[in-house]
Image 1: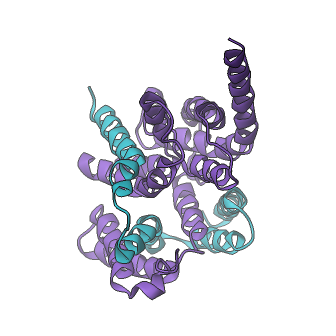
Image 2: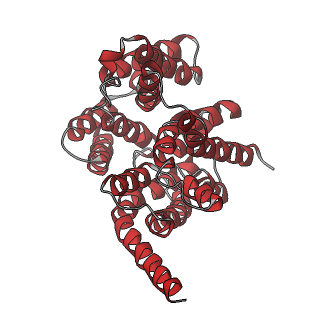
Length: 242
Length: 98
């Protein structure tokens, strides 16, 4: 009985400790949630659809890619494939975090993987590496506020997006390329970043001119990934790990 | 149900597979081939680049200015700083060159 009380209050304080750590992520992601909602409506989504996408997909960059391609009237299966491609990095997060949360009940693990975003992985992995246990209450405290704010702000952005009269003057139509360039630059410390970016850029421009949209996305991406696979491993910096 | 709805559902399933798949599949292997790992590492930059590069073909002075400033700010600032600066440059430049 006494241990129940202790573990329960321990879980509670773990939860709130996670919530405190989530606050910077909530603040940083808020503009993107609002932006996603506004752009989704601009690309032909309804407010409900924008809300649903945020609630079910819950991956900022992939949602932006999805609505961008949807707005270009790309074939549905290719929109889904692109969402999958952009989110593919989660496979690595998933493989990494698996050993940290293996002691949770299966249902908790299933939920934990659903909210496994970039910051969620980064913060949880940092906690694990500092020698602390990644508990479910702490992990939920870290992830739940980000999720709830994300979906509410997406819906607000969608409602607000309907009210914008001149999207060109406000630059709404070109905000996504700026945002994606920012994400590309964010990966610049990775091995082979420049060769991959140059290969993907050239291949996608050539494909855009010849084969046409939307194939330039897949062709350009394959060119960059193939280059990374083909180049000798000592260039890609993956063989130096213990 | 609309096409949009099914895109969202399929996109959600595909995304969840990436989030649980690494644990289910990759963690069964003790060792990932370095070339496969190098390829996986290249995925985000490769995909995202294809969404920016073709835009350069249609970009005018305002768009170029915004992208150059965004890239420059990214060397120092975080994602938020560079996005807001790039957007500000774009909106400002479009008031003059449309």
